[in-house]
Every structure is written in C-alpha cells, then in structure tokens.
Image (cartoon, rainbow over the protein chains, first blue to last red):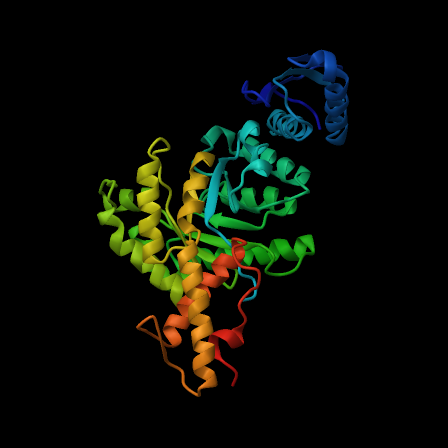
Length: 87
Length: 306
C-alpha cells in the first residue's frame, strides 16, 4: 500500500505508542523509545514486519514508543497505515 | 445444569487503552466487556477495534469470558467492529441499545454469517443485549426470546434514566420497575440477569447496597467500571455459609421425605416442599461454582426419581 497522506495513530500513554506517517520517496524509519536500549532492535523488527505485511516500501515512519508490547505496535501501525493510504 | 457459568462480575475495559487491556489476564472478575462504544472517542473507533483485535489474537491463554461491546448496529461503526474483532474470537458481543427484538435478530444473522465465513460452530458467539431505554425495557420479553445466543439480559441504568428524562438516585427507587421487568423476562426465558453499573468508584458502601438490592431482586451479576469493585460484588453474590448449610439440610430432609413416600416434610419447624428444594438447589449450584461444596447437585436430588 502507498502512503498518500500524513497520518498518525496511538497515544502518549504508558504501554502505548504514537505512529506518524508521511509520504516519501524512500522508506525511512525512526524510533524513539523509553526502552530503546533494551528493546530498540525488537521494536524495529516488529515495525519492519508490519510494514512488509501491508506492502509499505516507501514513507517517513516515525515511532514514539512508551513501552508498548508487540500487539500494540502492530495495531497502531496498522491503523496509521489505513489512515495514510485511504483515498 | 449444563452450561452454568458464574457471571457475578462483568468488568468494562476501555478498548483504546493498552495499559488497561494488558491487565485483563490478571483481573479476577468472571467476565470482561471490552468497550468500543462509549469509552472510545469518535475519531478513534478504527484504532480501538484494531487494538482490541490484536490484543485478543495475542491473548491465547484465556482465563475469563471475553465480551466486546460494539457500537450500535445503526451507526457506521457497528458492522465494522464485528468484522475486525470477530476473527480474534471473543466469546460474545454486548449489544448496546437493544431496543427491539429485530435489532437483536439482525445481530444474530450477522454473527451466523461471520461464523460461516470463519468456519466456526454456529452459535459460538453469544449475545448480551443491553436493555437501556424505555423501549428496550418494554420489549424485554421479546428481546429475551429473539435469539438462542442470548445467555443473559443486561440492564443499563445510565442510558435508561436518560431516556426517561430523570436523574439516577442513590437509592435507585426510579429503577425499580425497569429492573423488575428485565428480571421477569430473563427468568421466564431461563437466562441470567445482569445489573447496571455503579459509577461512583469511591463509594464502596453504595456499591454494596446496590448489589445487595439487585441480588435480593434476583440479579445474578453486575457490570463494573473499575477493578476495585470486583471484591465487593463477589462478596455480595457469594452464598453465605449458613445458607449453604441450610440448603444441604433441605436436600437431606426432602430425600428423607421421599423415602417415606411424601413430598413435604418439616425442617426446624418450617415446611420443606418442591419450591424450597428448588431454591436450595440454586444455592448449592452457586456454592459449587464458588468452590464451597465439592459436588454439583444432580437433578434426581432436586426432583426425586420418577
């Protein structure tokens, strides 16, 4: 799916995350997290997996994580993708 | 009693809050109602249903009944809620604003369609209709009979009082007729009745009083807005030790009576006959569900051999 407009999803509450998406020529993922040192690589892996699942290969992807578990990362990213790709 | 399920406490959990959803496994309530309706702002309906879906898909080691309160079917979110959440296999749907039997029948049909699509047993998804308006209360009997998926009727006093253009009081006198009518419909159909929420989380005495009233009337459970309310509600609905002991004596007495060829006998100066035995059997079944007695009472003990 193609990111055609700016979108965001999620909240800044604990155990949640905010996802910001913007159209771009290439894929660029940045992650801020309260637990970046311990879990940065795992969050990145989950984000890549969800983007791939939805066929997103280009866009500015910014994640601000507040200690979210995998299911929440997947859900918020999915919501943001739906919002950014709908016509 | 096949399929008897203890539903004393049904806790609402907002659907768009990961911090609350993640605690569901550790809450010691009987059921959870994950809310996609009133607890979710209009702008977040899509986000909440995705979150709930992924939460449920990951919650594989389930330890309580999981219901999802969808948005009413006449809104643009209701159908989408079902479509996104049902593949994650909740146990049932709490249907808000179940004002008429037709609304429930519509949900029943949709659930059957989803069950066919998901290739699961027809009837797998239960329905808990919310009777929360004057119309819903008037139609209680028809609603109770509108679908075999319905395992209980839930009374919702917040919306009900709004529809009546009245305030909800601490004593609850204004709810008496509606509470009773919902109960009659549930009891006539042989299903459970679940009482409304008590919104003041700091007022434990008020919660206890209201739960005791609901239990006296015949309700078997209550909806809760905060996990702190679980303990009080369980305490009220638990049979008291003296009730259990008396019920055991009643069963023993009636069995003695039957040996003598009669269906009525005196116990401690009071008459024991079929209705008394029925009530005792209900106490013992609840006590069994609470782990207070070791064996589940059988039908022959209640009715005698033919």
